[in-house]
Amino acid sequence: MADATLAKPGGLDTVFQRHMSVMCNKRSATSLGLVCVTTTSEVLHFRLEPGQDCVGRHLHYAQKVSPFTLSDDLALARAAVATADLISLNRFRAQDLVVNTKPDQTPVTDADTAVEDIIRASLHSARSGDAILGEERGTTADSPGPQPGRQWIIDPIDGTVNFLRGVPIWATLIALAIDGDPVVSVVSAPALGQQWWAATGLGAWTTRAGDATPRKLEVSKVTRLEDAIVNYNSLPGWVDDAREAQVRALAMSAWRARAIGDFWPYMLVAEGAIDVSGEADLQPYDMAALVPILREAGGRFSSLDGDDDVWHGTALASNTLLHDTALALTRKRG
Figure 1: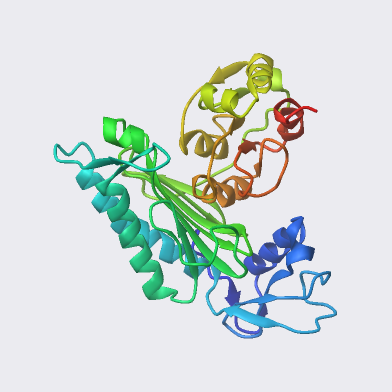
Figure 2: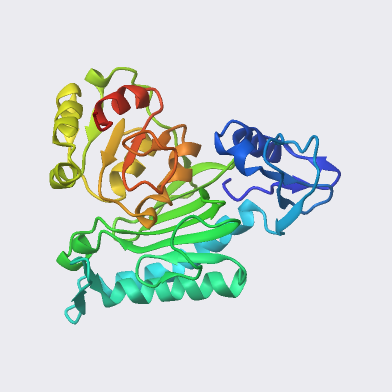
């Protein structure tokens, strides 16, 4: 189950050891020094000095960041999104839906702000010391970028245009990043009747309305781009980012090319239904919740230029096997 206990009295359990192994294999592990250490039934997140390994050898100091396990944080995120879903579904296709235009000329509805407000209240009540970054209410920190320690990242309704036009492809996205790297996430699409969630070392899972048990996610095994289904979302986004040649090359190299928008194609990559998905013109809150789910399903996430984070404005997700091939096509030239 996704909410498995991370630690047991007297030592490290297998789930916890797997979590540490995953962190050791990540590029940011040695530079950020993120590790979990336990000696009792409580898991603590510690920050080590740069260069230390993930099992704490040569530890010079430790700073306690949080007494909460990733399982605790995942449970909190899922509880918050359950409440948010009630609000968003109630406003979906409502005749009195209020729509305004933000300074960046994108739409925002009363549902967007109401959903973000309830999620923020839930997170602040349970984790008052954590930073929060949301699409509609901004950041509680001094800057909107990656924060040291714990930072919740929220997109209250990803796919607002779909939402206001009555298209059911929209979702609420919640992620927890530690030192800028997403490690816990929930993506909930109540109009589709499906939810996806993951935490580092705990696997990626999904459930549909009516399912008796969650289903574990796994990416596809397709090894050749000419056999793959790729998704590019919005052609104008690539053109505006001076990548028209790149998206054309990606689409023409694949078996099939699709233009599904927002969160959904990335979840389909995690499910193994699509092999590669990428797009430009994104914000961290558009991407953060996608990352743990994709990684735990065996996939890889980066920017279109290969940056392994959510802070560079573009996204490329794959089944890992095709990532380098896709990157060779999507990178900016010159």
